[in-house]
Each structure stands twice: as C-alpha cells, then as structure tokens.
Amino acid sequence: MRLAKKTSNLFRPRAASSAPGLDVSGLTGVISVDPVARTADVQGMCTYEDLVDATLPHGLIPYVVPQLRTITLGGAVTGLGIESTSFRNGLPHESVLEMDVFTGSGEVVTTRPGDELFDAFPNSYGSLGYATRLRISLEAVPAYVALRHLRFDDAALLAKTIEAITESGEHDGQRVDGLDGVSFEPGEHYLTLATWTDEPTASPSDYTRQQVFYRSIQQREHDLLTTYDYLWRWDTDWFWCSGAFGVQRPLVRRLWPRRWRRSDVYHRLIGLDERLGIVRRLDARAGRPLREKVIQDIEVPVERLADFLAWFDEAVGMRPVWLCPLRAQRAWSTYPLVPGETYVNVGFWGTVHVGPEAPEGPMNRAIEAMVHELGGHKSLYSEAFYDRETFDLLYQADQLAAVKAVHDPQDRLTSLYDKAVKKQ
Image 1 (cartoon, rainbow, N blue to C red):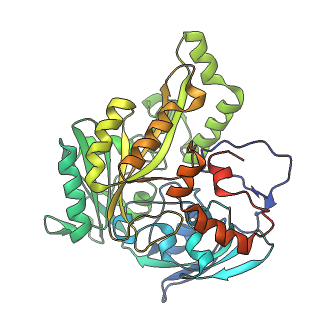
Image 2 (image 1 turned 60 degrees about the vertical axis):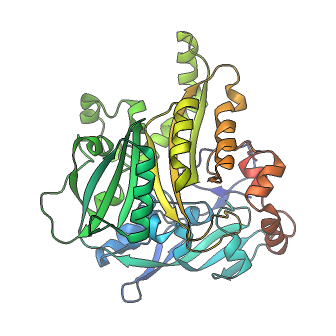
Image 3 (image 1 turned 180 degrees about the vertical axis):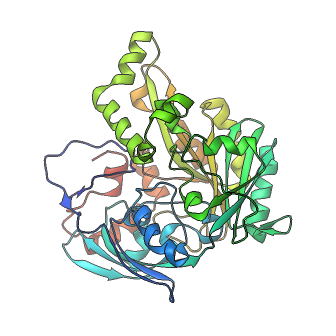
C-alpha cells in the first residue's frame, strides 16, 4: 500500500509496483486556523507552502517550517523535517498535539503524545500508517527577519558557538530566533543568526530574482528578509543544487521563469535524468568514472561536528554543506536522539565520481559507518545500506515492530527496513 502523490521529497529509489497508490488528493488542505489558541488543524498531505499561506496572515507559523515548499506536514512528521528553529523547537513532530492515522489495519486512529502509536510514528515513513489530520501548535512572528552572518575559520570554534547560542538563545546580547549555517570549504564556515523583528533597518532583500541566497552569506554580514522570504530562502535554488541546471548563471536565470525556480521543479528534472540516463551517458562519452549519489542528512553531537567535517573533507570532498543545530525536546523511540543534547544536522546533496563500484554505494556506506562511530544518526529519506542487525539497533526496530503488530497485524504496510534499505 502506497500513496499516489504528485510530489515527493524522497531520494530513495524503490522497486516498481503495478499496484495503484492510495488517492490522497482530498487530503491536501488546511482545515482551520485558531489564532487565539495558536493551533491549526491540517490534512496530512497539505504542503508547508499552503500551510504557511494560511497561518502567516494571522502572524503565525508552525514551530518548525522545513525549508522546501512541497514538503507535506504528514511527511515531515512521519519522516524528519528540520529547520533553523530546531535548535529551540526540536523537530516538526514535537509540536503536534494530536493526529489521525490511517493504519495498516484499515482504521483511522486518533493518537496523542504518550500513546505508543504517536511516539513511534516519527521516522516510521509510512510503515505504521499515514497521518490524515494533524493538530499543531503555532508561534507568533513579526513581518521581518534580520540576519547576521558570522564567519569562522575553525570548525571547533563554530561548534562551541553553536552550543553557546543553543544554551542561551542569544549571541552578543541579541536574541536568536533561528540558527543555521553553511560550510563552504575547510576553514570557511558561517553561522546565520536570525532575529524576528517588526522594525526593519533597510529594504528587504529578494533572492527569488537574480541574486542567490547562499552566495550572499559570503558577501555580507547583515541582511533583512520578509518572514515569508526567510521561510523559503533555500527553496528558490534548492539550497545550491540549482547550479547543476545552470540556473545560477545570470543569463539562464533571467530566462528561467521565476515560477519554475522551485525545488519541486528541480526534483522532477532529476527524475527525468534518472529515467533517461542523460548525465550517465555524458559521463561515459567523456570518459569520466561512474557517479555515486551522495544525498544525505545526518546528525552528529555538536562536540563531534569538527571531527565529522574533517573526515568528510578528506573522504568525500563535497562542499558546501548545510549545518542546522537541533535539540530533541523528548525521547522518540524510532529516532533515539538524547533529549536536551545538542546535535548538528549536516546536509549534503550531490554526486561523487567513484568508478565501477558506484552502484554499491561505497561513499554512503562510509558515511553511515562514520556517523555511527561519532554517536550520530542518519535520516532515511534517501538511500541506506545498513545490514539488518545494525539498522535494528540504530532505529530500535523492536519497539517499532511491537507497535506495528498492534496497528498492522496483517503486515499490509512495508516495514521500515524494507522501505529504507531494501527499497521496496
């Protein structure tokens, strides 16, 4: 049983299936927004773009707004969304008050924090069912976001600054509402500190036109965005991945319609290339080695961030990479981060020429081993190569199986291991 969705933010290939998907076209809306209680009832396949369009006129946004417009609320909860407010608000599922889950047994179950189904749902990726309705908490925001870009030459000092800001919620006496960063090269790292404000000190920048947001981080110390543009600052260029399509070149950018400068458009282009093998053929014609896709988000304890970046530079050599601190508010069975401890999400998205062994995923396997060694975890939205024993240990598969036995006793839904590793 699968969903028939028009968009996807997964990078996990899966076996072909002739079975029809579940029609979820009627589950894409915002049911209601309560500006007094600061809550919203939302259908599971509603995108964050549509959700923000409904809440922002009330001066409200979800506690965590993942960075790509077409990520769905249900997808961010059953998967793992993250963004710059995660250092203080945790992950998207931690602001869910209740949800209705369509389970493998064919029932719709209303579940709340503390229920076994609710607590096992994050990182289950549909192996327990699909959220059809969610009630979430919202937070108030003003009209603008002031940014400070801080450069660090030393990754260890960067990590210490992340920990200090996470502990205090401020830097140099100024409140920090959002915190993320980019590591461009060894010795060139940046943190972007965001502060909500109703008092703009300049005209807000617009990175949906000719300028590219991630490049501005290296070019200016201060910036100002509208709250709306801040939430989607990464989507226009899919972080920096639009460069693969030439969209960052001034001439191409002028000719490429603004409505098509979106992550979901680029994702569809990637899918087209996978079907037609265009890049693979061009590499073969040029005599270049086979590419391995290295598209992952991982979390490591903040004190091991410098170790991971140093290893990643030497072993993989892909830059830039995204940095996003987070703290889990409580324990979650299928993604066991230590509550109250600071982790840093490192996101990297690209390809590496590795040669004939590319289909075996040597780079991805090495990343998995290193993340495990450093006491971290890896998101499962992309390819995974763990053996069954390691996977079950890292993602506490015994607890997931116990909940699945109650709500999907006939195994109508694919298990998490089969989805994430066996690509079923």
